[in-house]
Image (tube, rainbow, N blue to C red; front, side, top):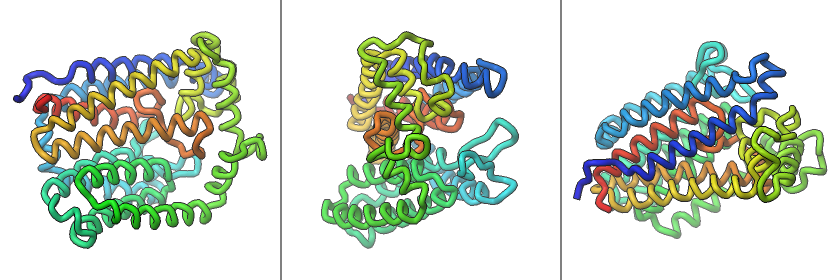
Length: 364
């Protein structure tokens, strides 16, 4: 039975995560922004602007039937492919941290690879909904899907942006698995994928350094292992209750740009195990609501789309927390709703808006 209202628990959890994120972006960035930019509120003001625009977009999209994304899935995908190409052109694409991943003017920019994640989720969901019977065939079902996914992955790697590319591929693999692909095909694909990943790591010295520093960061404490060590030095003193909101020591120019990928380390330092667990419970609640929405969706497209959105969020959370706690190599993945970043935050809120619309049609 179609519901007239969206999932209010999902809305509440999303807004609560955003609130925690706003507080932590200011706390984590104030010192760095004051010293480097002369304005301790620099990142907080911009994050508030992004959050405001994202919330407005979320509520607007919540009231747009999700079938429209199916109708325009191909067009959206082609636009994102175009943006992935032009971002590589010097003079158009903006380079930061060694990656040419942004298009924009001055301080305001967008990251096309972030929006490609949603575009690919929508298109793959449409393709699989229309061709589910073919998914058990490697040649007719799985191969076309994987070819498109890895073509997009290749363009993203030209920037290079291994983290975003990994999230996109992982998300699409989850959708394909839910659609009914054969386990044997996944085993073969997994072996090829692991071999390809190893080749990517070996081909770039900086990626190899990230792997070795992940295994033993203290072997190069002032180089490739610096971020992981500083992150662990933030988490450790946090203890059970933390050193207090605003009282982090690692944000005093020890942990590089703590408001982005390593914001969870500052949160754990200031709010302790209790604060970190609270945030993880919020993410767990969000994922649970998303799974319920996917199971109750009225059609295959709605199910696959909801699964893709939830998988994207879950994979980013797992990778980010894994990196921050030293369980995974540094990949440059933001923590959804908490980390500073306009493109990432806007994409997540748009995706939640789509999920909320599916919830209005979901039978649960």
